[in-house]
Length: 284
Image 1 (cartoon, rainbow, N blue to C red):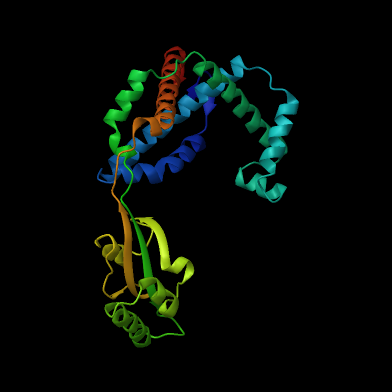
Image 2 (image 1 turned 90 degrees about the vertical axis):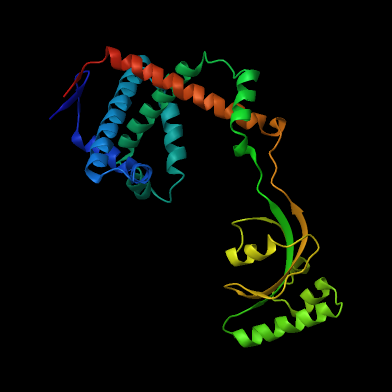
């Protein structure tokens, strides 16, 4: 069945390309949906996206009739500069030659001007809207808990087997029990002596899970026992802990405003496309 939008034929390949572009994210979001039902809905959404893109393209070409050639050439040079050679640029961008690239650039520039027209009368988010968004989305502005930790580590590798590594770290532990200074033992025993073994502040997810399981459960100033990670044996010292906190509005205000502007722009484009659909002749 042929799809026509204002007399322009839409090839099935365009819809299939959109299907494949959306597939991974779509299947992840709707993985509990029956496969046949999910595939049918994916096809419908892809078709809808293609129709909307075609309507925007048609409107951009109608409103923005001419793009200065020097602007096209400048954009082409900048785009090709991102690749090692001309063949790579054509291959990555799925185009046959520079003329095809210029067609894409002209359309992109027209669309940018069209979106500029759509956005130009949008107001800035109000103080009330900024405050409301912040209050309703405070979890987005919560900093992760951080700990500042140092460690003595003896790696297990081709030069040091497990027994040898354990014996070394055990000597360090014995000296600690006898009152030795942790940082001095870093220099004496550790395979990681930079900054006296101080790793600085870390958040969960930065280090090996088995390392974090120990250090995030230490009290400030406390030294752990010997523990094993995939890298070897460790003794850790916790210097400081910063609890998770919600950043005040003043620190995140610019980000909130940007997010609200993006929402307003998205809504404006959606409303604009809806008006185009009402006027369009779409045939299947």
